[in-house]
Length: 328
Length: 260
Ligand SMILES: Cc1cc2nc3c(=O)[nH]c(=O)nc-3n(C[C@H](O)[C@H](O)[C@H](O)COP(=O)(O)OP(=O)(O)OC[C@H]3O[C@@H](n4cnc5c(N)ncnc54)[C@H](O)[C@@H]3O)c2cc1C
Ligand SMILES: Nc1ncnc2c1ncn2[C@@H]1O[C@H](COP(=O)(O)O)[C@@H](O)[C@H]1O
Image 1 (spheres, protein in one colour):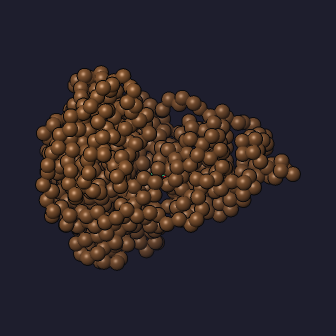
Image 2 (image 1 turned 45 degrees about the vertical axis):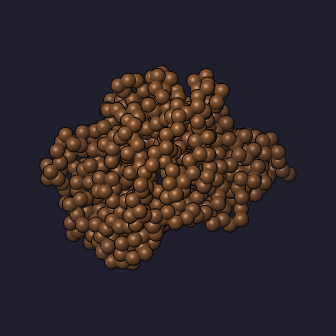
Image 3 (image 1 turned 60 degrees about the horizontal axis):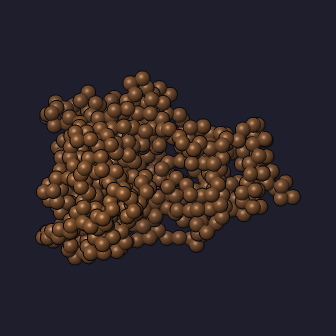
């Protein structure tokens, strides 16, 4: 059995759940295994309905204390379910929830954990995964020395599952409701309070057709001015990578990426951006991506349509002049 | 408040090509400069700020060969009180589990209220060690922390980062493990006096035998088969020439695509 932990927040099931189901079926098919979904929630039915045609079994734990994710409450429940149902492979999203939960859970279960994977090959006695290292500059193939094992799955690595796929035609999962007495004292140790949002300054980079995004390659805060002027000249808006925010050079609402904004402009100009997965996941759907980077092997060039290998601090000022000439 | 900070030394690969060595299981480290893992700098700063506000001690732990002392000394210069280095051939050949267990054995021999790690190591990118440590220590943990505020001696209010700029706000009781995300504060530079004082602060080195670790327990659970540079499917169309030519071509391209 392949188990998939369904991720949801504020009554919404997350895309990663359907992406993991695609992967689960890919593996299950070659292995003739069943796919099970695990749902922990205060209201399981809507989530069970959402996945019941995509899996063989659903294990539901319903409890008011499960209305919001809380790693410490999830842990004993999942420990029990996994120990009793013995899935060969347990899949959890490599998300804010999954990274808070999976390493703790796998360690409690003495299970190998492979994180942030984007590919899996499973045979009866062997699990091989592929994942990135060194900010995307290296791919590694790693095997688990024992099974069962656990993986966290990188978001966006698989299409969301489709009912029409031949592997799953006619599936209508058996639902098992498992009751679990949650020890209230867990709340003493770890208590969810609320969801918060990062304050904004009123700029909405998702609305702009042209984004000029800067990364750590701009080196110093004072270099921002030239880029900002250039962005203005071409009717664009300034955006950036996370390290620029971390340094306090620009406000958080300018950040593109998994922990920032997802953008889809007509033109995205990436200046001095390496192209880490967390950044790319926020801009890869831009219509035209132009990247300037002095490292010819920067991962950004694998999503860019046009690339320049060179020093942005030299090229941008010259480019800005050319644009002015063109505009007359 | 006694705080333990886990620091990892990593090669800085952000601006250079990364090549695999002849074993296929490691990268060529020759021209690379080693630094403190980015997120760990923020974890250390978090610890120093908490110490300044609430008193107590900051202990640094790093697992690695002797060159890792550089990272530890930098941390001592910034204001940590003492440092521990774990080193053993057994640790070096291990995986995340091996390293977590070794760190756990060293940490559990110390007094602590809080353990801080980085949320991710920039080399292996596992995001694993912090919460795994908490599981072995049987204490609560929170990953990707972007704010820490002490409510009293035994409780902290924290923000955790989720996708798309959403934060999960929660209360966590100490002792706990927090994995710290970049941007939570502004890491300081060491002062001249700090650097001078660092030399006289304790830096203890332990191997597996000294930590009473049974080699069987720390056997890795996973095995790296091979590494390679990723195969790129759709590579960008490169624009070349002199800087002047490049600017001209880029300008034309941008004018067309942006509809100027
Ligand atoms: C949970 C999590 C969430 C994250 N969320 C995000 C997110 O939402 N958005 C995000 O961006 N990152 C995010 N990150 C960080 C991400 O992993 C990378 O660290 C970050 O994207 C790197 O930013 P960068 O490309 O600006 O810097 P670097 O990786 O340091 O790259 C700088 C680049 O500039 C180039 N360069 C240097 N000098 C020049 C020059 N003179 N001319 C041209 N090129 C030059 C270098 O070759 C290099 O490629 C997240 C990380 C984690 C762990
Ligand atoms: N060798 C090490 N020595 C000390 N701390 C480490 C080591 N490896 C990882 N860590 C800590 O664990 C965090 C997460 O690492 P990882 O799970 O490898 O992504 C790092 O940011 C460090 O704080």
